[in-house]
Image 1 (cartoon, rainbow, N blue to C red):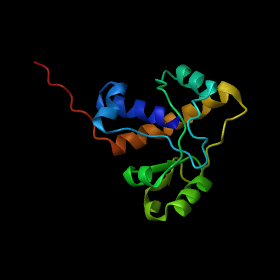
Image 2 (tube, rainbow, N blue to C red):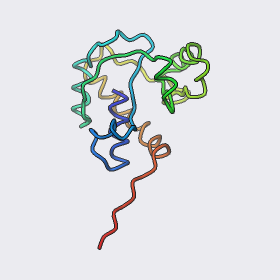
Image 3 (spheres, helix red, strand yellow):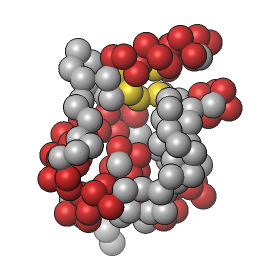
Image 4 (tube, rainbow, N blue to C red):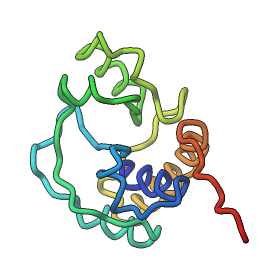
Length: 145
């Protein structure tokens, strides 16, 4: 869900269609520390993204690998314990591992239904917007004739 939200913000900031991010080589990728590989996006997450008006592209779970970590500009974590696990598992990429909200762990909404994911999604949107503003150069305004 966080990757979909981040990609929507990046596409908005660059003023490009969401679907073109991959071809531009600019996108957020979701990877877990103990994901069950190839699990699809849950119904609750799909419903939450729909309520937030965020595109829900096909998604299958994957774990963070050395290759993904090496390619990443940043590795955002939802909790400090996740950040510590990334640092321990990938010490050479420790400087890339950051909490999405430093000092505050974002709660896992599993078991709270779609509403729990909507609340988490809203929080992630609030956190991602200023991050994208700092990390992604804005697209130039078209000149009017």
